[in-house]
Image: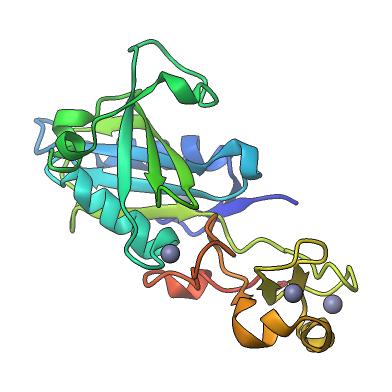
Length: 238
Ligand SMILES: [Zn+2]
Ligand SMILES: [Zn+2]
Ligand SMILES: [Zn+2]
Ligand SMILES: [Zn+2]
């Protein structure tokens, strides 16, 4: 499965790696001389151990609070029932591979209440956890900083377009729902979902959840975001 994202500025589609550089080229043109503010291009990736397909590229004003980023992440990808969340810092300043879980230092309250410009600098890496039970872990990576303000504090520059997740029964149709109590099969197209309902009582009761464009899909009661809803649905072929 491949993951692509559209550019906020020109609406062209790029690979999940290519979009970073492309957006920086646009952002560099926004730069003012003399400086009129401070802002950051932040890449948010899902935990690579869960597939590494979901991503967000955000443009965040330096005066936005880290809790504003928290609110944004919840609204687009995470919020199910008001779980706690935290940002954690790398313990050392040196570049870490994002697998070094124990090398992140939690400092939640202090980070949440801080302005982005007091926490972030070009190259900063942060780990973010939502829900300390069924945790969704994200990694934030500051790709660049610019000397301009961001209208409205946070702009969604790109996100992965809905992934073509296939039905695990017929293997050919795009999955529209999943069953949170079954593993194999777990995702179903409309037709096969009807069949699954006949064999799985939970599915009819409570375990049927929509396929959504988020790394929290199928976790807890997560049923989709509240912003950028247009791209939060299932894959539609062009
Ligand atoms: Zn572009
Ligand atoms: Zn929940
Ligand atoms: Zn099917
Ligand atoms: Zn089931």
